[in-house]
Image (cartoon, rainbow, N blue to C red):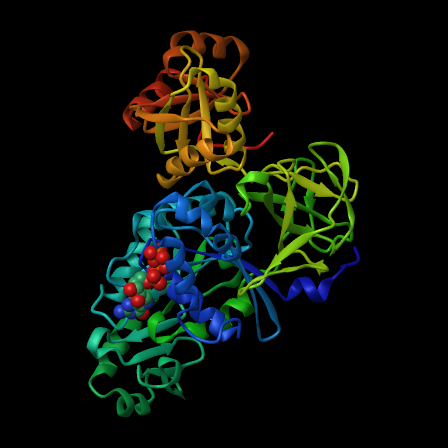
Length: 527
Ligand SMILES: Nc1nc2c(ncn2[C@@H]2O[C@H](COP(=O)(O)OP(=O)(O)OP(=O)(O)O)[C@@H](O)[C@H]2O)c(=O)[nH]1
């Protein structure tokens, strides 16, 4: 098969950073952008983020919507590579979008705080990567602080996340005694020097660990390094590109992001080893990025700046072919030809109109609610990309309508907001109160605010005792029986799919145990 656009595709890297809040994601993003020349000084990303988080009040956040759109995708170049870094909202704005973004990347960078080890949010995000065998590169951050023993950290990653570690660099000391890292493959010793440009002092290549030059350079700390590396032989794995690409092994780097130390090593290995855009599955076949016809899918919808217009931006991942402004494409779900006259590409600093784009790139398509998450666009072929699911919510609220005359408007608002994908809505089989479910708590405030301002509906939340949900499917008769017996806990989501809500994990496990013929799903593909 002829490889179309080969040069452009092979130099693209599309990835996201996964980490627990405070591990250093923003700091690393900033340093990566500095290397890419996309920002001139450290602090720019943080300033934008601070503006976004200055208040948890949604009114304020709404003013900042433009900012969150721009920082959702950051495109920059490094050496000859075109890099798309997709933001995974953390803290307050953690939502289903955070999970779904991971379905649109080709690899991820996992950041671990050396003091804290593997933390809960990292674990959750990694589970999502596992669904697609996404390749993972690891950066262990904050070596300038007294953290856990490096061997202990590798053990934590291996056992908690069930992935092999292949250390690429190894730290010499930590905290006040942090001297730098030794590269296990290039045999380079790189000195940490917080005073130097980019936190990095001299780099000296030695002949190996036994080289007496190391004794001279490291003094008494050389034994520590030798002992650690000897222990590594039994405890860790040599780097294997295939195992990394299969998501079975993660290459590990050590550094200090705030001091820019270790970032360039990481970035160089990343562009050289991380995968270029990969083939993607559709319901009928896998599509290679090198195919000539243009195809791709939507993974995120964001309401635009002006709430009065219900204008939305669909974040669209290109999977094959070449995008050219003004091109006609087929919107598969609607079975309609549409012209994409106006798309946006997200540069690290701002948004610009895009004239052409390639697989791996993310473009923003303006629309008035016609595009939904998971929608496929092609140049004619009937394809539907898979693997862009909804994720089961973890928080729930009952919605109480304050003006009974507005029940239609409430329904419309809840369903439309759910279509944007950060919340889900559930209508009970018995009773009439809607339930909103979300992966992150801030989304509840967002829904209330938008119901009031965009749909003119006044409502309030009431607590409800659910903690988890599963979509259920099964053979017709069994499902009817299940519906009858469990009706109190059964709901239909915005698209009419049956879902079971449970008040505890124990309750869910128990129900699953009792209803073995019913299938319970933690994710649901878009119809
Ligand atoms: N000592 C030390 N502190 C660091 C390092 N990297 C980041 N930090 C600090 O750790 C804190 C969190 O860093 P961020 O980059 O904001 O972390 P984040 O993961 O983006 O956090 P959220 O945006 O809250 O999710 C900040 O105070 C940073 O200055 C490092 O290498 N060493």
